[in-house]
Amino acid sequence: MFGPDRICTAVLARRVARAIPLLIVMIGGCGRMEWNWDWAWWKSPRRVVSPTRPDQANAERKSAEPSPARTAPPEHPVAVSNQRAADELIRNRQENRPFYQLYLISIDDPDGVPRGEQRIRLRQARARPCAMVLEMLCIPLGRSGNPDDCYLLYEDRGEFEAAVQLVGSMDVPVLSKPVSTSGPDEAFRAGLGLTYGILERGPIIEMPLIDAAEKQLAEALQAGQLPLPERWAAGIIAGRLMTEYRYDYAAARSYVTQAERLATADSLEQLTAMFWRADALAHDGKSSDAALVYQKIVESYGPRVINSQLVQQSKAGVREKRNR
Image (cartoon, rainbow, N blue to C red; front, side):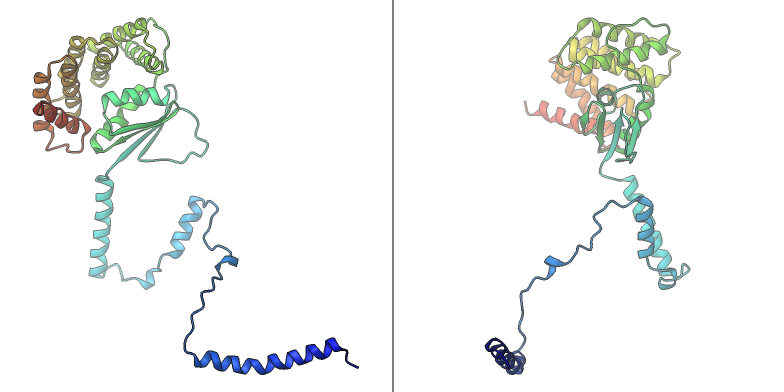
């Protein structure tokens, strides 16, 4: 015997069975119908979201590359021409990149992942004061970071490479008080370390510390047995201390002029010294004299180092004088 529930279920099943053919006919006869169902919500993502190790990434990239059998033979003229063009493009991109980054790090980097164009681990100096002094010697487009992880952004490749070369001689500890030294090498390191100490104090100015730094840097600048790059750097740094902290613009011009005389003609070092000499003149109210130096920089260096911040700022100095 069938109960009422089973009878109703059977009747319903027969009605559904009769309706299926009719439904098929309706779908087939009404033309193509688009259904806006989005079934993606239940699918698992196909993109790998976990970090990929460099060796794993290289293996995956190589596996995705076409096999040699599917590409044109190396001796094929078209293939050779395309490969040479690709190699040349890569070289041009490496040599003419829009920006170059120099990272200075004074703490252990747990990841150990190189960043930017150059990453230098400082052993004694702190990153930010070292970057601030480097900013005096090789002026960048900008600087950012914190006391232990700082970077400089360069637009000119020559200035970037010069900055990289200078870092080695600038890795000295911060000094918070004057010290006695013996010899020009110790004088340079002490003057640099004292400058770091001054910069770390920020707006707090301690004149005895500035006096001590100037004395050490002046000794290094005059030391004939000290390498020229360090003597030049000592003159530039001393000049900047006089401009920024002492407001003694005559002394600043004297220091950077001595540094300019030590530099090779038409070199980046000479350009930097000329720029700071013009800056000291401008701070001293001698705008006409400063504009003449800026104009000389633009004429002498502009065609050769168009991306240099020194040239760009010198052009701004010339424009400012004309607009007055």
